Length: 525
Image (cartoon, rainbow, N blue to C red; front, side, top):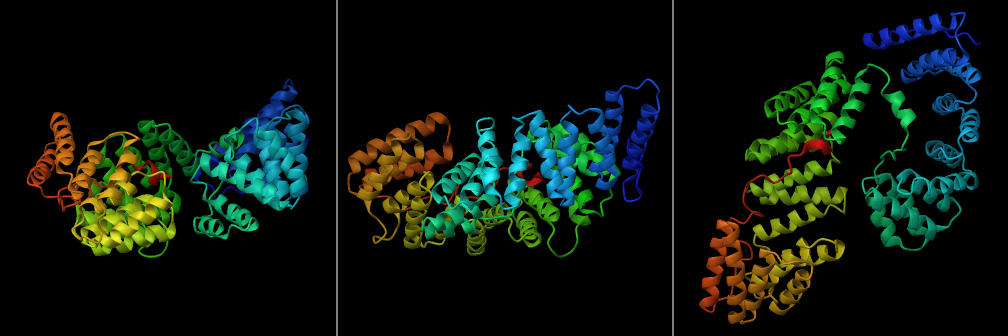
C-alpha cells in the first residue's frame, strides 16, 4: 500500500481540520488492525481520500484512492472520484483512463458517460464524445447536459441542423441554461440564419450546465464547512423545506465569518429561508447584516441579491421609496441582474417615476431580449405617459416577439379600442384580436375589452349586452373596484358614447401595490 499522509491543514476551517484528523486517525486504526478485511481497509482509505479531495488536497488524496481501488477493484466509486481528481489537475489521459474503467464496471453510468464525453469534447475528439452522449440519451432523455453534449458534438462535425435541433430541445427543458445560446448561435450561423444567431448571442451568459451526479454531490456535502452547509441548505430550499434550510444556513453562519464572500452568501440565504418560513423580522435582520458587510463599491453578487431581497420586501409592503433605493443598489452591485432591473422598473412606474422606469425596463431588455415582463412594463409606461401611438406599435411588435403571451395582444386590443387619439384606434381590428383570444378562455378583462371594441364601432347595443354580462360576473365575484369602472363604461355605452380610457387610473397595472412576487427562492440561487 502507498503511504498516505496528511498535508498542512492550516488553510482549512478548524471544524474541517478536526473532521479530517478524525478520519485519518480512524484510517490508521483500521489498516493497523490484524483482522481488517480488504473491504474495510478500502473504505478507510477511501474515506480519507474523499475528505482530502473535498478540501482541495488532490496530491494527498491520490495515494489513498489508489489503495482503495487496489483493495476493492470492483467498486466504481474510487476510479470515478479519481477521474475527477485527475481532471481537476489537468491530467487528461489519466482522467480518461479512470472514467473508462468506471464504464467497464458499469457501462450505463450516466454521469460517467457525460463526463467522459465532455473530456473528449475538450480534447477536440467529437467522434469519440458523440457515441457516449448517444448512449446516455435514452437513459436520461431530459438531462440538459446530455443534450448539450450532443449538440456540441454535432456542431463540431458541422451538422448544423442536428446541433440546432438538440440545443433547442435542451433550452426547452431548461430555459435558464444560458451558456447553450452560444453554440446554438453558431449552429444557426452555419445554417445561414443570422437573425436567429444574433438573437441567441445576446442571451448568452456563462452558466454551468449541471450533471446529475450523486457521487460528486456526496463529495460536496462531505465537509463540515460553510460551503457544505450552503449546498445542503439550497437543496432544502429547492424541496421547500424552509425550516431545515434555515437550520443548515445558520450552522454555516456559525462557523463562517461575515468578512468573506461565503459568509455573506450564507447570511443572505439564511434571511431567504427565514422569510419563506414566515419569519419576516428575522429575514430582514440577516438581509440588512449582509448589506452592511458588503463592500462599498464594485461588483458583488451577494450584496446585489441582499439588496434585491430587501427591495422586494419593501415593494410588496408598499414602501416604494425604500424599494427603489435597495433595487437601485442591487443593479449597481450587479449590472447584469435582469430580475433586479425588472423589479426596479416596476417600483419606479408604480410610484410615479415613469420616465425613470422606462430606462430600467430598457436595460432589462438589453441584457435579456426575451424578458417579456420588462417589455410589457415598458409598454405600460408609454401608456402612463399618454404616448398611445408608440404604445400601440410597441405592443404590436411585442406580440410578434412573444406569440405565447396573451397580455401583449390584449393590451394592443385595448389601445385599438379606447385610446384617446383617433389615429390609434381601429375597432374592427381590436374585435378580431379579442375574439381570437377568447378561444383560449373567457375572462372579465377580455369581455370588457370586447365591449370597448364594439362601442368603438358604434355597436352600442352589442357593447351594452357584453358589458352587462361582465359587470354581473364581477359583482358576483366581489370585485368592487372593477365593477365600479365597468358601471362607468356601461353608462357611457347607454349614452351612445365609446370609452376613451383604455385603463382607469386605479387599474392594477398602474396603481401602487405589491408588484413583485415576494417568493425569494430565485435570489438565493
